[in-house]
Amino acid sequence: MPDYDFDIGVIGGGAAGLTVTAGAAQLGAKTLLVEKEKALGGDCLHYGCVPSKTLIRTAQVYHVMKHSRAFGLPAVELPPVDFRDVAKRIQSVITTIQHHDSAERFCNLGARVAFGEAAFVDEHVIRLDGKTISAKSWVLATGSSPAVPTIEGLNKTPYLTNREIFALDRLPSSMIILGAGPIATEMAQAFGRLGTKVTMVQRSGQILSREDKDMADTVMEVLRGEGVTFHLNSAVLRMQDLGQAREVTIRTGEGANIPLRAETVLVALGREANVGGLGLERLGILFSKKGIEVDDRLRTARKHIYAAGDVNGRYQFTHAAGYEGNIVVSNAIFHLPRKADYTHLPWCTYTDPELASVGMNEKAAKAAGIGYSVWTEEFRNNDRSLAEGEEVGKIKLILDSKERPLGVQILGPQAGELLSEWVAVLNGKVKLSILASAVHPYPTLGEINKRVAGTFFSRKIFSDKVRKGLKFFFHLKGRACGAEAV
Ligand SMILES: Cc1cc2nc3c(=O)[nH]c(=O)nc-3n(C[C@H](O)[C@H](O)[C@H](O)COP(=O)(O)OP(=O)(O)OC[C@H]3O[C@@H](n4cnc5c(N)ncnc54)[C@H](O)[C@@H]3O)c2cc1C
Image (cartoon, rainbow, N blue to C red):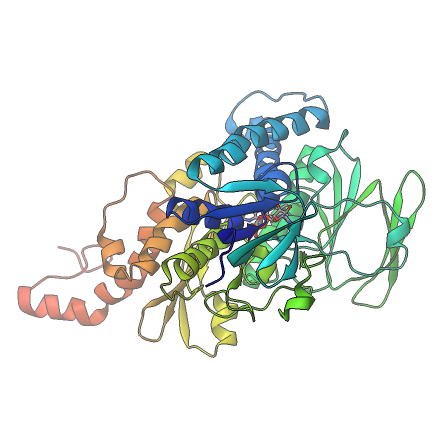
């Protein structure tokens, strides 16, 4: 058997790569992690989840301050936002979390961390800084980058992506956002709340197109109410740099060409897998801009080379990358065949209100041809929501024809947190009756979970059939109000 330098080599120090590295090293595998940037952590830490959620929180606080009257507090005159201070706060949160993702920590776990850009020489060997390094198994965890489509004039017009947006030295007075996925929508609300005049351009007729339309439309209405302008069913024709402003010409669904102007443009039109420069062509590994092709065990066409995280183009979330990292550890280190299963993979868009989802929504159930029923409960009927001044939204429970949960979507305050109970219910195949009868603390937003399960059962429990049975066996006398006088 050939003598390789390492048992396993990991290319990319983001969520997927770090998970594999920590798992493999702690299990005693001689592990190499290669990262091309100066620090570990990947997109999530430096240009994604962490900066975006920090920015969202800052924008939310400013928004609440501006609306102090709604909470019975005096109105406050607020000075404009200095984005350098916002960017400083973002950087300080990143720096704090960076300690957790430091090279020293992974070294302490037993892995070798090397910085540089790796490329394959052959199916077991990479070249790094002019040296060759071999490993028995390899993991491609190189992540993704913002997709920048071919638009006339784009290459001559300055624009922002998620790489630049969190480190601006001033708040843009206006911003056109191309795209209306989760990143675009979160940024639209956050910058809008901080004082930027935001316009969103979306090709399809709905924002957050993976979500059910009723939920996405409510998010859009909230943002519209906060001053964001939407152009749906609109294609970008061209972009132009006007010096102090940028011009984006769009063609609307009605066929009109409209020039939009703003100080800056954010391109948030999806993601492309980081597959270039790795020498994958030489290895016969199949890939496209969308991602590297893998089987259920996350193996590429070369069975000892795995691809996990954004780079395989499946579900581009940090928790999906972590999950896939663990699948790779099972397969590559334990040699226990384990397949990735995304049936109950949750996700959340961190707008205010948040939109969180696990399992199938109506769109997915329809696409799969599965019969379903929908059970809903509104946040305006939840006492805690009213106390918090957060009344927009609802929970949707989707049941199959055998009345088993297919999925849950929550649009409302702290939806991502509330979803966790459903993640446990769906993964643990917990009966709805257990959730409906479990006592939840009052007053909490979480009562909505119990309540929607209860809605389903109350139709059965309080049916005419049950009422008649009880009346017959226990001689109940029936209605007291609106019935004949006693
Ligand atoms: C603005 C924004 C907000 C987001 N918010 C959320 C959120 O709230 N929740 C959520 O779950 N997800 C969110 N995501 C998605 C999340 O960031 C990604 O799904 C996650 O980072 C994927 O992890 P990864 O390990 O696959 O890739 P990455 O984190 O991108 O890591 C890949 C690493 O590989 C390195 N690399 C690339 N090529 C090479 C090479 N040749 N040699 C060596 N190293 C290389 C890169 O430098 C990088 O460090 C967000 C993304 C963005 C852009």
